[in-house]
Image (cartoon, rainbow, N blue to C red; front, side):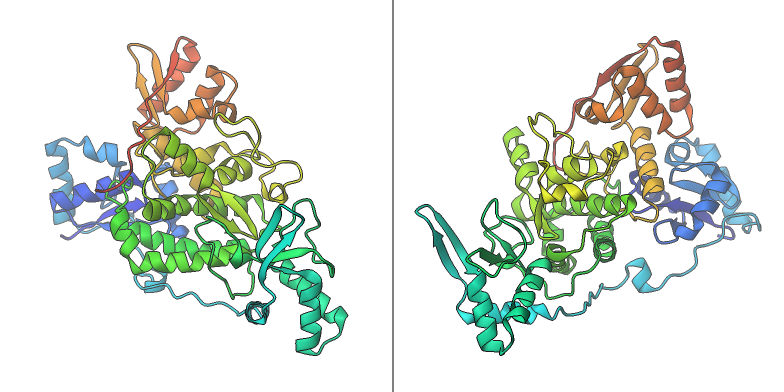
Length: 479
């Protein structure tokens, strides 16, 4: 082949995967410019195509369009394009091949995580070997398992480490501030006190969080830094175990993989991650990625929820310990990303006014998170990962992709009916107070094309009805 076929894509994009799958079935060689791996070429892709969506397909300098455009080509049109690249070298104005990236950049090798050891990790080990940690009883009904008393811990440090009491108190206070331990008595102060207050090491908590029972000896790091490392590992998992349409996950093979075991190991570092001072963009990218990974982690370990009651338990009990606090799927979605709005069917908000997790919540809800969060069902948006630097553009692309497909929006022009994903009904408050505002939101976030033109026609006329499609809760498994 003298010329070349170029596909602009992103990781986890279902239409990108379908385009590549069709190319392979047709025996057409192509070059993939993954805009996650090559973010420097995003602007170029938009300038060449006038589109924010992917895939965008070129035969030499001939822009075919997206997957739907490619899929609708007649046999004669397709053969003409194939003839073009077989007989003619790519002209100067055709998209250039991607620049080779290192294995570390494109995910071709195992990711090795390193960290700076926390000096207090040794103190935790000493505490566990000291005999200080035991079951403690207060009153007739309160029993705190695997815990220690503040004053006794200070006494032990003074004696065993030969240090002044003031220094020993400072060390214990630092232990708590670094999220190695915490107070266990409800309604009492969170800061360490040299008195009869009871504390427990984080790894000794009786928690069902999927990263509990492990200890992180790493120096606490900012959330974006940890998220970027975990994002790279998640990308590797997605690439290896996602189906070709981006909507199915081979959970069985993933659970047995070395990459998944590495991911589990490094979720321990979330326990003491620094959440203070996160920007809106950092909060969005961090918690969207963690939510999606947590769904997969729980599905691999526990299996998928099979009915309404199991789904309720799944989204309200599956959790990680993050920054010293437990965050379940419900708290991440509705507490953090929806700015502490009530969950579907809930009576109360996820966080009370005194809940320390409330300080991490977004100041205002971000509606586009609904196109990024993956619930494990077949009607959920395709799995992707997100970066703080490009989060708004990435969420817009996710919205565009979701609304382009039949899972998000279907128009019936003869009946003047707009059929939308059930997501728009469940979270209507995030999108608009009435049908007109809802359709305006959909129109604003839909990519250019016939569907958008038809939707705009319906909206302008004012003569339309909105309905919501049945949600497919079947597992998005490849098997």
